[in-house]
Image (cartoon, rainbow, N blue to C red; front, top):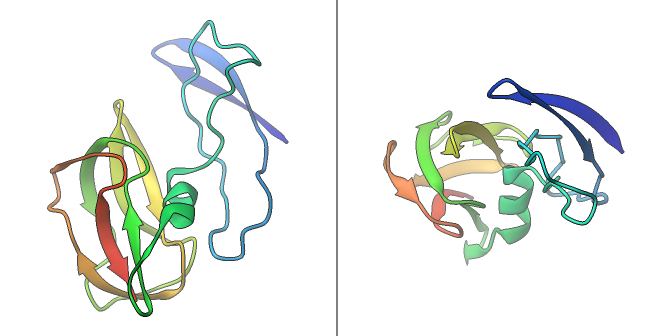
Length: 134
Protein backbone atom coordinates (compact mmCIF):
# COMPACT_ATOMS: atom_id res chain seq x y z
CA UNK A 1 0.00 0.00 0.00
CA UNK A 2 1.12 3.52 -0.75
CA UNK A 3 -0.17 6.71 0.80
CA UNK A 4 -0.42 10.03 -0.98
CA UNK A 5 -1.42 13.52 0.08
CA UNK A 6 -3.55 15.24 -2.57
CA UNK A 7 -4.60 18.88 -2.58
CA UNK A 8 -7.80 19.76 -4.48
CA UNK A 9 -9.27 23.26 -4.44
CA UNK A 10 -7.32 24.15 -1.32
CA UNK A 11 -8.37 21.03 0.62
CA UNK A 12 -5.84 18.32 1.49
CA UNK A 13 -6.81 14.66 1.33
CA UNK A 14 -4.90 11.58 2.41
CA UNK A 15 -5.35 8.76 -0.11
CA UNK A 16 -4.17 5.20 0.37
CA UNK A 17 -3.70 3.10 -2.76
CA UNK A 18 -3.64 -0.67 -2.60
CA UNK A 19 -2.08 -2.61 -5.46
CA UNK A 20 -4.69 -4.95 -6.98
CA UNK A 21 -2.15 -7.58 -7.98
CA UNK A 22 0.19 -8.33 -10.84
CA UNK A 23 -1.11 -7.90 -14.35
CA UNK A 24 1.38 -8.83 -17.05
CA UNK A 25 -0.48 -6.89 -19.76
CA UNK A 26 -1.09 -3.64 -17.88
CA UNK A 27 1.43 -2.36 -15.34
CA UNK A 28 -0.20 -0.28 -12.65
CA UNK A 29 0.92 3.20 -11.68
CA UNK A 30 -0.77 5.10 -8.87
CA UNK A 31 -3.07 7.89 -9.97
CA UNK A 32 -4.41 10.28 -7.38
CA UNK A 33 -8.16 10.84 -7.38
CA UNK A 34 -9.82 13.45 -5.22
CA UNK A 35 -11.54 11.93 -2.24
CA UNK A 36 -14.66 13.45 -0.79
CA UNK A 37 -14.13 15.14 2.58
CA UNK A 38 -16.61 12.72 4.16
CA UNK A 39 -15.01 9.64 2.57
CA UNK A 40 -14.41 6.78 4.96
CA UNK A 41 -12.91 3.31 4.76
CA UNK A 42 -16.39 2.05 3.87
CA UNK A 43 -16.18 3.99 0.59
CA UNK A 44 -12.61 3.51 -0.72
CA UNK A 45 -11.21 5.79 -3.41
CA UNK A 46 -10.72 3.91 -6.72
CA UNK A 47 -7.07 2.86 -6.85
CA UNK A 48 -7.02 1.54 -10.40
CA UNK A 49 -5.57 3.99 -12.91
CA UNK A 50 -7.72 4.71 -15.92
CA UNK A 51 -5.35 2.89 -18.19
CA UNK A 52 -5.28 -0.24 -16.09
CA UNK A 53 -9.06 -0.30 -16.10
CA UNK A 54 -9.01 0.19 -19.85
CA UNK A 55 -6.45 -2.62 -20.11
CA UNK A 56 -8.57 -5.05 -18.13
CA UNK A 57 -11.67 -3.96 -20.03
CA UNK A 58 -9.90 -3.99 -23.38
CA UNK A 59 -11.49 -6.38 -25.81
CA UNK A 60 -10.28 -7.94 -28.99
CA UNK A 61 -11.77 -5.98 -31.88
CA UNK A 62 -10.25 -8.39 -34.38
CA UNK A 63 -7.46 -10.95 -34.23
CA UNK A 64 -4.41 -9.26 -32.71
CA UNK A 65 -6.10 -5.88 -32.10
CA UNK A 66 -6.92 -4.47 -28.66
CA UNK A 67 -9.31 -1.57 -28.15
CA UNK A 68 -8.45 0.96 -25.49
CA UNK A 69 -11.77 2.00 -23.95
CA UNK A 70 -12.75 4.94 -21.77
CA UNK A 71 -12.83 3.86 -18.14
CA UNK A 72 -14.86 6.93 -17.16
CA UNK A 73 -16.96 9.60 -18.84
CA UNK A 74 -15.02 12.68 -19.87
CA UNK A 75 -13.47 14.63 -22.73
CA UNK A 76 -10.64 13.31 -24.87
CA UNK A 77 -8.11 16.15 -24.58
CA UNK A 78 -5.25 14.85 -26.73
CA UNK A 79 -3.61 11.82 -28.26
CA UNK A 80 0.07 11.37 -27.47
CA UNK A 81 0.59 8.90 -30.33
CA UNK A 82 -0.14 8.68 -34.07
CA UNK A 83 -1.46 5.86 -36.26
CA UNK A 84 1.43 3.57 -37.17
CA UNK A 85 3.45 4.44 -34.07
CA UNK A 86 4.83 1.58 -31.98
CA UNK A 87 3.88 1.70 -28.29
CA UNK A 88 4.91 -0.28 -25.24
CA UNK A 89 2.59 -1.38 -22.44
CA UNK A 90 2.45 1.39 -19.83
CA UNK A 91 3.30 4.19 -22.28
CA UNK A 92 0.96 7.22 -22.14
CA UNK A 93 -1.18 7.20 -25.30
CA UNK A 94 -3.86 9.83 -24.57
CA UNK A 95 -5.18 12.33 -22.05
CA UNK A 96 -8.78 11.98 -20.85
CA UNK A 97 -10.23 14.85 -18.81
CA UNK A 98 -12.80 13.89 -16.19
CA UNK A 99 -14.10 16.12 -13.41
CA UNK A 100 -11.55 18.82 -14.35
CA UNK A 101 -8.66 16.39 -13.86
CA UNK A 102 -6.42 15.22 -16.70
CA UNK A 103 -5.95 11.44 -16.60
CA UNK A 104 -3.08 9.81 -18.46
CA UNK A 105 -4.29 6.70 -20.26
CA UNK A 106 -1.54 4.18 -20.98
CA UNK A 107 -1.25 1.40 -23.53
CA UNK A 108 -2.43 -1.92 -22.07
CA UNK A 109 -0.22 -3.94 -24.46
CA UNK A 110 2.83 -3.61 -26.68
CA UNK A 111 1.92 -3.04 -30.31
CA UNK A 112 1.33 -0.53 -33.09
CA UNK A 113 -1.44 2.06 -33.04
CA UNK A 114 -3.84 1.05 -35.83
CA UNK A 115 -6.70 3.55 -35.31
CA UNK A 116 -7.64 6.67 -33.36
CA UNK A 117 -11.41 6.29 -32.99
CA UNK A 118 -12.50 9.55 -31.32
CA UNK A 119 -11.73 13.17 -32.25
CA UNK A 120 -9.78 15.29 -29.79
CA UNK A 121 -12.20 17.45 -27.79
CA UNK A 122 -15.06 14.94 -28.08
CA UNK A 123 -17.04 13.79 -25.06
CA UNK A 124 -16.91 10.06 -24.31
CA UNK A 125 -18.86 7.72 -22.06
CA UNK A 126 -17.57 4.84 -19.98
CA UNK A 127 -16.72 1.91 -22.27
CA UNK A 128 -16.44 3.94 -25.49
CA UNK A 129 -13.56 2.66 -27.67
CA UNK A 130 -10.90 5.38 -28.02
CA UNK A 131 -8.15 3.72 -30.04
CA UNK A 132 -6.97 0.38 -31.36
CA UNK A 133 -3.55 -1.19 -30.83
CA UNK A 134 -2.59 -4.15 -33.00
